[in-house]
Amino acid sequence: MAETLFPTRQRCKTCSKKLGGPGVAVYLGLHCSPRCAGLAEPHQDAATAPRECKTERNSHWEFKRRYRSFSEIPNNLREDPSTSWYWCGHCGSLHIGHSRIDLTRESHRVLGDREALSDLLVKSRGHATLKQVAEVAKIRPIRLKELEDPLSLKFDANALFAVLGVYRLKLAAVLREAPAGRKY
Ligand SMILES: [Zn+2]
Ligand SMILES: [Zn+2]
Image (cartoon, rainbow, N blue to C red; front, side, top):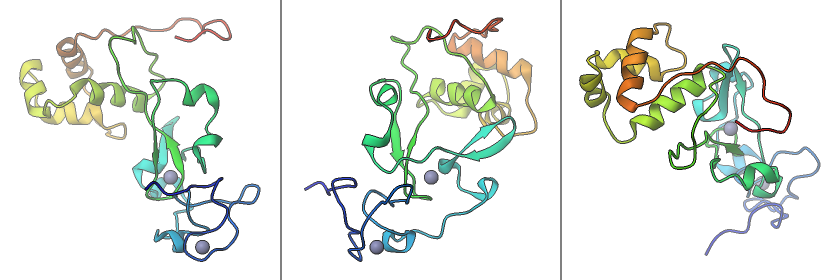
């Protein structure tokens, strides 16, 4: 049977303490503290926190937005079938995951940073291995690995275009912001 989660659950599953006052963290929807949830004390610095808990913005790490329950995720995100969410094993909160690539639904995507590009490349590769794609693209697998890693210092633009060719993707530049309310 599925566990009852916060906010329906009002008491910590482990110690029965009251759960989730205003702004008070709830862990995995069940617990009042990392300890009760069996988690390590979360890192205070995003730079050292695990990948699942952070996102890269303007070339530094920031913590991802934390939600204590599904009901706290804004409606527009919850109803968008291209978004996903997951329980974070570091902070015990829900995070919004990367949008999945669904080529039948998406015609183009704006890539605002390296992380978005990496995500596009990883998702496009699907179940193929680095080696398989690199072979078709006629590049070394390490070059593809670097492209898929938003933090790698090395970034070979020629390799990028070779890989995009394999995935049948083309890059475009957005020259103006879309009018308010319009989604890309
Ligand atoms: Zn507790
Ligand atoms: Zn987290």
